[in-house]
Length: 228
Image 1 (cartoon, helix red, strand yellow):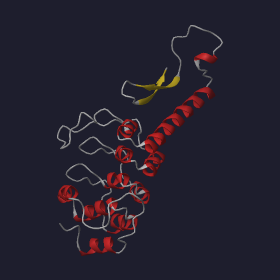
Image 2: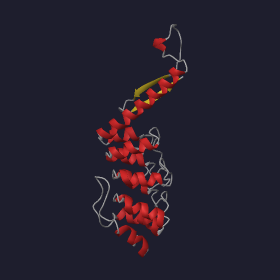
Image 3: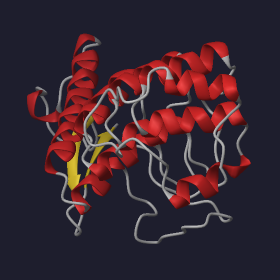
Image 4: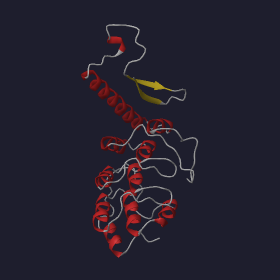
């Protein structure tokens, strides 16, 4: 299929071959499934998806600015340009898309966000950048009823659980470190308001306190909770 008018093809070719991150698909035609999904997109949006898949940040920026490509445009599978960039660990392209207003936590029809895709692919730098930009690390996959890849195997799992399932140790470690840091920030904020954890209180018998703790379920999935 064609990925755009002569103008959008020029935007793509003018900076082709200069991907911004490792782990992406070699330059050339998109995969068959990607091409099929993009049939529903406008020409500019289709070109943007291709640029994101290959980590071509310069082309992505031009398509958004000059061709009016919607950074949140989703293909027939619900996949957005940010999904492609995150999966491929294309941090520069992630920056362009988020800077243009791409929705961080938008899920595809399989219930996957960009952060989940990056975690599953072991795209650690993209995981870190998405977290820094505000992606919700607690969000869990909930597949659309109309989705093409409904999977009980993925449903209900967050980015950390998905990274661990796929054996992506570095991505999992980055997510665990981020979650612990958020729990620490919460505790420090509470301490400034005069709260003390139960073990530091001068009295006993308190049933509940505000306390951040780590929980590991029978499948080895770790989650972080606040008890009030």
